[in-house]
Image 1: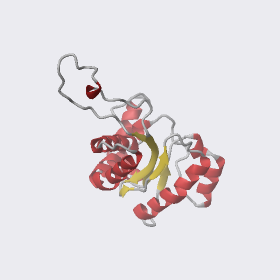
Image 2: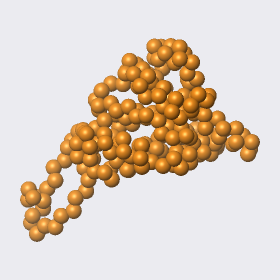
Image 3: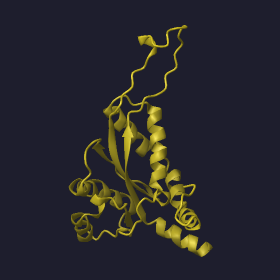
Length: 207
């Protein structure tokens, strides 16, 4: 069993994990003092936004550090052509930065734009070794999902009030707050994640 874990960890250390996530300007709790019968006074009411402004963020990371982010306006469709731009402008530079000529494996999920023929051809032309058989609906075995949760907590602490502030908070948290140790721990959890999923026969795990 220990040998299997060691092999899985060595494999995981070669992987560039990737995914998209949505970040929104969230309303932060505000505490005020008011007199009796002032519950609905304009000065004691905070207006909410039904559809808060947000962004879609594509990111990637490996055992060796965070990759480059790609910021996409919320409401924009991530189709095959836009995904190719992300791969060209963010994924490939991340590979050069993190793996420095060493072998790597690119992971993304089975979203339609990820599996488009034009994307597959692009990856093949550039000799990108990709995990094409990644199972759908499998957040338990993709550590970047945990990284997104960490990121959202960090961004919310910044209390961004505009799209620009939101982008700044995301970039700052990604590049300067999330620690290398956190990323290493996430990758090192891969053998345990896979074992937990197998034990649970594909059902929900603690990850």
